[in-house]
Image (cartoon, rainbow over all chains, first blue to last red; front, side, top):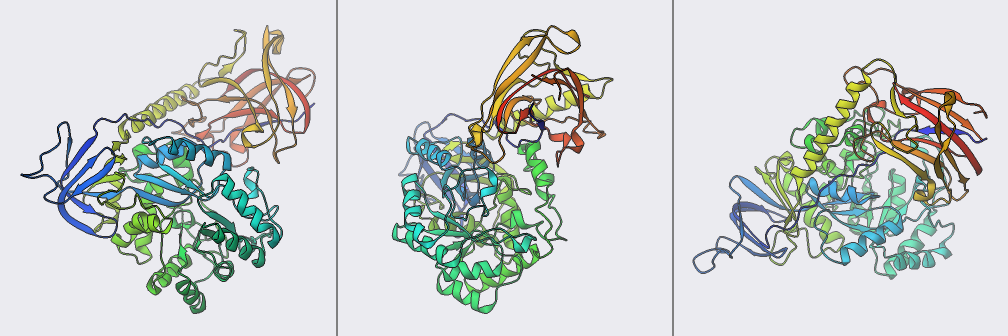
Length: 544
Length: 46
């Protein structure tokens, strides 16, 4: 007999819609342009076959006719921006990239995922323009100790214990296609626990090996001490702003001297301190909320985490000091960690950067040309001739009001519009179906999912039963299911589940899964949303 | 669990940090290494 467990919170959403190319030529007329560094007065921008081909008042004029079949976009009162680049995310599904694009984030820099998944995304991008989602660059895995930070997520990690392993470790990352290297320095002490972490000699060896291979290095830190170690060891950048104390002058001088950049990831740290509140502005912003899934709303309402020794306000003050000293500040969110939502949180990050003293233009540059230049993306990050037409058109002027980036008119990936309306409509349908099901649950008695009396796997709502194992997380467990004769209460049939739970994954499982949402992995309200009440899942079961 | 049919009720609001208002999947699984076998019937929410 094996222990039977129920897991009920799985955070995935799929549902973004691609939109076919509708025109090979776009002409934005009378539009203000933030070119990646500064605001240009109202002008004309021409895009042909996914590339920006002309900018300026004479781009279309007496001597240059509007190309036949061109789509004309009125830019009056609007601003055209380079597609936003999020310099710190973790991507596990293509749907996350689709969601990012809906919110104007057209490129993401992943800072740890499964290397196989990263390779798959790279291969798809190399095969041709992937215009329905954001492009993704990735570190793939990360450099950490056995049982160190990063190993808790269930993804198999090639860990290190000594400097002499660094050269081979980096060579393996090069072979896996890493676009840059991610290193972790994290003892956990500032969060009230201890865990193994790389020593400075090993960190330095990894950084030197990466640089020898032409790869830059971004280092995870959360304390000033860890940041000082990373800078001393030669890191190119910090993946977070530390929040235990503000940097002292020695650290500031070292960062300036070594041109070390910082990706503050304020979005995920805004609730990190014991007294830091959870932000609600993104979830409540009507310019963004139609495109937020229930899972996004749940994440945005989740604190991260309330640690006594850390403070968002310390991180904010620290960035103010670093920015004043001339340290490069970049824009990244650390989505999809608690408190964030893919794509949407970049708009909050821009706002928080301005609270740390950046001007709106500096914040916009951090999320566009700054990220592009730092990570060697020469084909994007600017509205300029020859650049990819990854563009965001917004109402108003975000160089005056940074929150204007949320008022998106259209997003383009290589000149192809992202189907934001379709994405929003699919979400609305999901919400509507969930509300209808919630109404059903308001009734008397239980709502039957399956009694298997049809001799099939069908369900009365949601998605039909499916086998599930830890294979998706790198495990080797198996599961098979079959409707068999003989059920509870002398009924005719029941569902039999058999398999082997393996030992290749730390938290193994094998069994069957029911998804109650209107679409697979869409969240569903399993209680009364208007009047929450305890919910019970009634199950009859037996082991054999 | 036993070799006979038993009825179980689980209050989703008491399962870890689960928020019943956002349930995406309900999984019946074994988690101890080795072979397993079980049957389920009459699954319902209320």
